[in-house]
Amino acid sequence: MGAKRGSAVKLSGMKSTEAPPERTKSGIIELDRALGGGLVPASALLVGGDPGIGKSTLLLQAAAKFAQAGLKTIYISGEEASEQVRMRAARLGLSDTSVQLGAETNLRNILTTLEEEKPQLVIIDSIQTMWADTVESAPGSVSQVRAAAHELTRFAKRRGLSVILVGHVTKDGQIAGPRVVEHMVDTVLYFEGERGHQFRILRAVKNRFGAADEIGVFEMTGQGLAEVSNPSELFLADRGTPTPGSVVFAGVEGTRPVLVEFQALVAPTPHSQPRRSVVGWDSARLAMILAVLEARCGIPFSGLDVYLNVAGGLKISEPAADLAVASALLSAREDISLPADTVVYGEISLSGALRPVSQAENRLKEAQKLGFTRALAPSNAKQPAVTDIQVTQIADLVSFVEEQFCAEKRLHVGDA
Image (cartoon, rainbow, N blue to C red; front, side, top):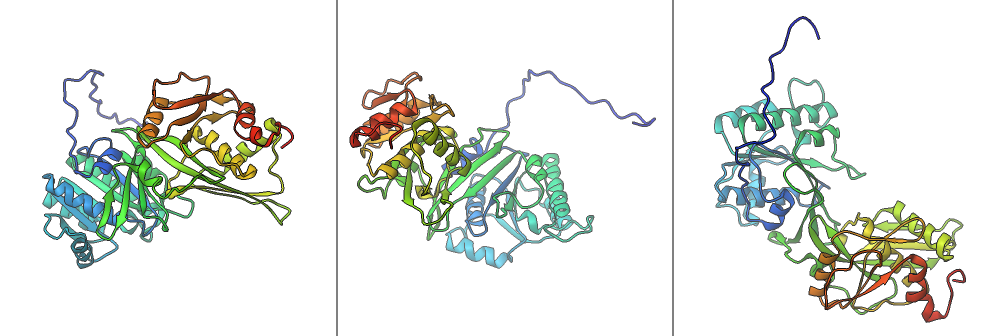
């Protein structure tokens, strides 16, 4: 370490008489939910998403709301001129807000401006356009993004202001630049959505001040992003009469129960290698479900193309969707529709057993609220007392296949 000694660090106990930092709510309920209850002072946030998905629109609306809530807010754009930002604000009806605009990419000039203006919130759009003159590389490079994020985060902590950084997402869905940027900030939010859908999902993948995996749901309209207070109703709005391959999954995103529709299509393939196409779910988990169905239930999918889609553009990651996926695959393969008033949830193990999932009561209450009367769920879990829903308890995948699918065709597992 050398002969020179450092200064001693001031230590304190775990108990503290200081009140927790007071959050500032934007008034956009879905944004506040993803943030964990509002914006925390002296915090750094990173918002990532595909180009054109609506990040700048969301943050411009958020800047206006935070300014109305009393925060002195500065919006720095490195991609557009101030006049272009004003044009978007006028289209969104935000021209009368007190947000201050700036167009700059030089990090030194930005920090000098922030020292003079002393804002409480600053939005940087985007971190990939920032340029630090102390780093000899082009803007957008790994070293530039790392240096700019570090300086802005350190400035926010030192001065007690909140900073929101916008980050572009690469083709594989990661924030462009080094992953260390995600470790520097307190909160990482991903703005997700399909171009063909009007729905947008704001997902918290990291949050030091709240629950991770919490989501906020928005709808893209001509006047900007509108909040969706009941995502389940929205995701199931276009669902018609029951069709083979369509199954409603009772899921949970963060603390919020969400009902979504899994759609499967199984068809003979003309190719030697069957195709497996997945949108909105994990392709590796689909391969596992197909293997369990063949190994434990004797139902092969060789020679068949398999397509799986989560309706509405939502991405599902929890294992509780296993049983819904298996139901959709079997429904499509056997050309049998599940009743329209049925929801499905449960995790499938490699042995074919069904494992219990968390927050079963919240799942069933959400299903009940939307008019569902039946549920297919694991039997080894404590079933909540939701009296208006008939819960069919299932021990394993073999009995599930026999009772729900093979009985109608008078088949036995292993002969399918």
